[in-house]
Image (tube, rainbow, N blue to C red; front, side, top):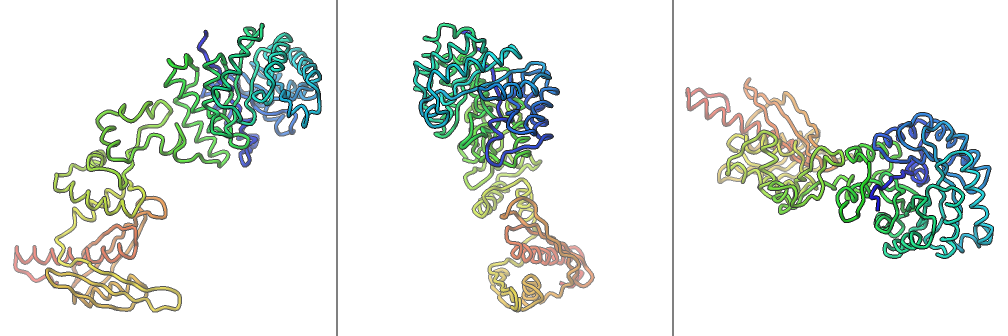
Length: 515
């Protein structure tokens, strides 16, 4: 059996039908070009008769895309087929894709036709499409809920009229893999001219089985899979192209299958579609989700550092992602923290690592994720800080509309604890005044700045202060998820720098530096 699987991408047709996923003319062209770089075998560019916009986009894609087939969808009637050909005639490799429902429930309630009438209409449609181009695909809408005997009859008749591809859709995502695979297997066994056409699968994800059903179809004789980037599409969506492609690449020997997809273009394709539609994928989405190649658990991180194969069955590079991510959070271990610091250019001693890990663990309890800038801030804030003459033990601030800002600060100096309160122009000013009352150190605030060093609502704020004491200038800095706490810590840090400078100066010359 030939193991080549053709990838029919319907992102621009079925995918675009997903609520909120509409793209304009230029956006469709951009996406089509990326699909060509991805090297899908067929781009279903749209439904030409649906609107003038759809017609024009299919026409332009047909003109611009030269290395892969371009298909247009049409119902099984002459007006649709004629309109589709008007757009597709410019394609280097055109395909007319015509369809009609074959399940009894659709025949009775939607089409209001008998099986014989549907069979005749299908044959006429394929004949009409074949008069325009050689490559004609015929789809049996709602095939998975159709009578198997009638399905075999209509498939045989469509192939006899020249259909080159027969699509068996699980239109409403109703099938389970064993059942769907059996339908494909039955068609290969009972349709006498089945070898004259490629069997195709088109599965929806209403029960979360679109990819599994598609692969079941492949394992039973299908040689084309219809899918979309990020799995977008009607209702719960379609089979996900990236999951299909990587399942075949990773388990090709089991599936007896291979594609021509340039998998390194997968991530780029996913990101482009997100940017065009605004439809984001969940973080734990297979292949392209933010967590697909991210590891936080300490055991997993340790294994990854020793050999990526311990916890990754494919490489990030194989889908176009630069590298795996060891997400530093509360489940991470010392090994991963040390590795990240080494990547950032810091060689920590065992003692420094232990201190950094303690600080990191405390921060990780506050934040969902600790970023590189957070790690640098930890080092600069704590490991490089002066001897702590004054240490903050308590801090309470009150501020708001029509409220006088007040701060109560508790500092420890050696074995003694001091606490005082003050008001100010704001909570930070009030805290600084309270500290001045405790320490008796008169300062002039020369500069105060704060910036975010990471992302999100729980981002770390990095605070810089510059103070003058009797003409001498001292800098202080701190980082915290609480900007008030960070501001107070930075101020105390500057005072501790001043106290340390006094001791160093006294030890070297005996000079009083005014602190």
